[in-house]
Length: 200
Image 1 (cartoon, rainbow, N blue to C red):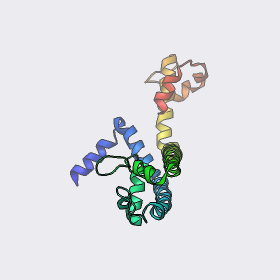
Image 2 (image 1 turned 180 degrees about the vertical axis):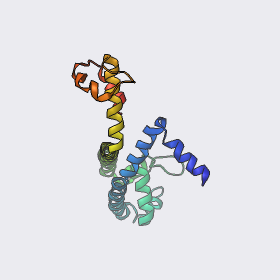
Image 3 (image 1 turned 45 degrees about the vertical axis):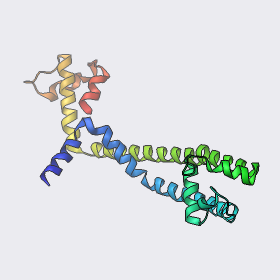
Image 4 (image 1 turned 30 degrees about the vertical axis):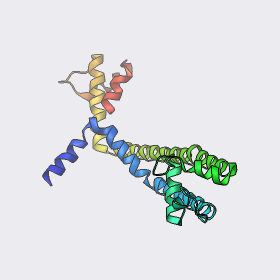
């Protein structure tokens, strides 16, 4: 437990801020990822049923065994969608399909691979990235709102900022009263980097 708490404290360091943002963004996009998996499985199932009917009924070597049942056909369809559509010997399955069923089957296979790779996968990736970025942005906004609602933080930061600005202008010293020099604040010329650093 002690080691776990130390690890959590370590992850809270600024150097791990980007890593934590990525992890939280991925967690926020898990819903989109799960629905993408459901969509993909439905598409694979429909194509596998069609392949089972077309290619699984004839006892053709290097074809029938890959579409002999719906689960086997789904696995073959899954492999083909990722480019691993080969037999145990390494020959593409659809070379045998083309020889047995003609060009129509090959064209259908090409359209399927193109549609899955260029269409479905890209759409899923784009939506997942958008969802992840939205989740990370929402988390960052939540943290910023929490900081803005922290009155104690505001009081200390604003007081430190005013003292810093007036000290730079020479209108205020550490020993002096802050209220006596606030009227001269509008005369101070300061870089925006200093403001960012003080209110961060």
